[in-house]
Length: 316
Ligand SMILES: [Zn+2]
Image 1 (cartoon, protein in one colour):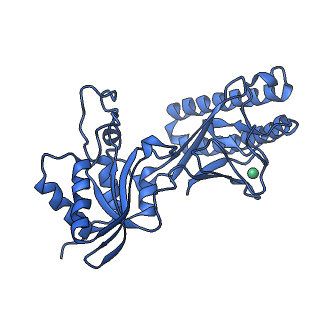
Image 2 (tube, helix red, strand yellow):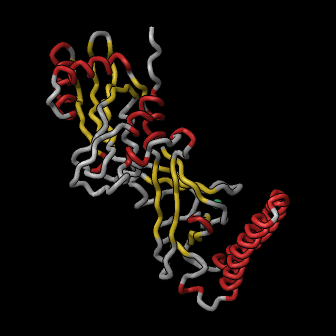
Image 3 (tube, helix red, strand yellow):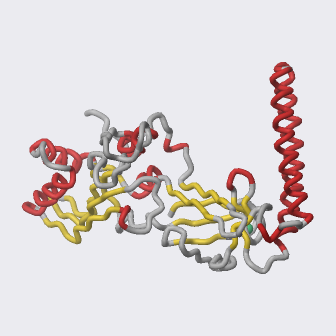
């Protein structure tokens, strides 16, 4: 018997499946998800990414994205037998859209079994954190010995949200498995592990013991309220020193490649010192503010409003 593909293989395949390019879509050359996804190793990427951008007026914004790959793999199990049944419907109706094929597929199941609570969801139409739009139809199905939840999923691979979906794939799962697409945790790496939770794609955050983030300010050292503040100036000096030192070590390595490795090692030790100093200064700068502050450090990393440790996000 031929080995059946795994859930991981099926989902990765959906993300790189060509979903067409339409001359009217807004993707531009190579702008579509399925094109950009070629060659990516989804399993090695984080399940969620969280970056912050500070604006001088203190508003700033947060970008929180849940990897569609991890979300589908974590919540679904690919079902080869159901897939074969769906493929037969698709082959018999070559002129139908995928949506029509899925509709006929459930009609066929209904004729010989039962289909309960049939629900169709397009994540584009609600609060959502997924890195790509997902369309799915799910129902409680009883058919030829199967009794459970059947989920037919398509992933959007293009820029025109009305078309450009991957071919549909069949999965099983427990308790409406894809309903958490707007849910995520944000937590710090500090010893106390401060944690917040959102169920509406980051509009609101809840926590059992950490402070309310309702009025959180997203700031960095360039914020208007820190203008002329000597600590903010010190942070800027450290940033400039970090940048200079990076340029210097690069120049040195180019000139003396033989000593590059040693130079890089010493450089890293120096950077650690400067970064440690920077961390302490940020604590001093934000510690006195009444409002909770997410301070934006290098690379868009947000720092915990309680302890200053880096924040990261996890999908539900
Ligand atoms: Zn913390």
